[in-house]
Image (cartoon, rainbow, N blue to C red):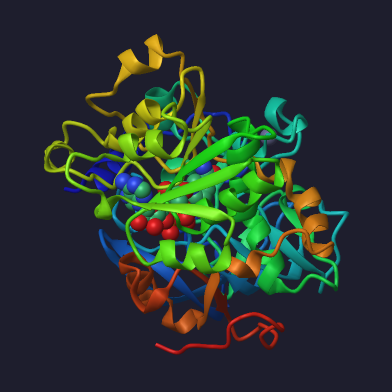
Length: 445
Ligand SMILES: NC(=O)c1ccc[n+]([C@@H]2O[C@H](COP(=O)([O-])OP(=O)(O)OC[C@H]3O[C@@H](n4cnc5c(N)ncnc54)[C@H](O)[C@@H]3O)[C@@H](O)[C@H]2O)c1
Ligand SMILES: [Zn+2]
Ligand SMILES: [Zn+2]
């Protein structure tokens, strides 16, 4: 049995904690008889390791007073969805509806939601926050104490994150927004109204990628004049590069290995690139970065790739054999590359434990290693929305495709393999408006 499934069975046997104030394991209305059987909808569901399918299931219905049923008008695929697809994030159940970045129109409202109206356009945060606990009071929404009762996570991590949409039973088992409708618990907290001058094609990305990249930059402490190196030139890395420059970085260098670096050169001309497959004999990412940065290295390094992407055979086999869950290669590269007393932040997803961690370099050279956490996007989403309105940031720079929900299963595999020049997509449903000016036109698969 795959680790993901074994973990789910263990959780079911042990039972959840009693901290959650919202229903757990509502990951598909047909699995938990929590829907309105008279109306069907389409959704993208996880059907086993490396397998997703478009399924039909009942439309969700209001289950708790602070719920909203959202009619989805836009969603997307995130690098994090690949960790679910691959089973790296554990406790997936066959039939779980995925998708943690989505926007839409309020379709039905529970009696406890006072700040929203039927028909209002809104974007959801990827995390589900209660709005009232210790962390929520500080807007640290990703660490809400009341929306995820997972026992395994609590034991393994020494604490829990918030519940998350479409992100396994490890984070509460909530149905996601890669669907025609979804249920939003504590909707008065977890939905941000979108003004008329911000189209879905821009507002959607307030769910995750914008807040996450912003958090990676400010939480790792990028300051005026800093040289910043970023591992992973996906959408998160690209926006983190943009935001580093906005926060005063003097130079940004992005490290990756594929066509995305050419995209970066075209769309972000102030960013330098380092392709690690093109290094000369005897060169490493660290030696190259030293050479590029006064022989000391960058002031700040940010990880926007992930722990599941082993570079060498050793870590590949250790992961395959279950001797570790994540490779330490990228983090070690960051530590050895960064100047003494510099800062390293980890935003790419790491699931558990790693071997061969270079603790010596970290300690002796005073490297500050920061886990950025699942990003508390609600801390930033109002100010980021304003920056979109003012034209200070343009989320469309990272968007390559517009696709249909009906084709999303095929899109997952293209996104995974970086085919057709695909990175951030906009997924439309039958409820979406025509493509906004400046956004890609529809591609069918
Ligand atoms: N912390 C959070 O709140 C949060 C939120 C969203 C996404 N994430 C995570 O951030 C990461 C990036 O997200 P994304 O949507 O841009 O993903 P993505 O999969 O589109 O991009 C990841 C990039 O990393 C590159 N990469 C892989 N191994 C590398 C290596 N050894 N060195 C340099 N680059 C390497 C890949 O080629 C790819 O271009 C993912 O792990 C995602 O799960 C975290
Ligand atoms: Zn995400
Ligand atoms: Zn809370």
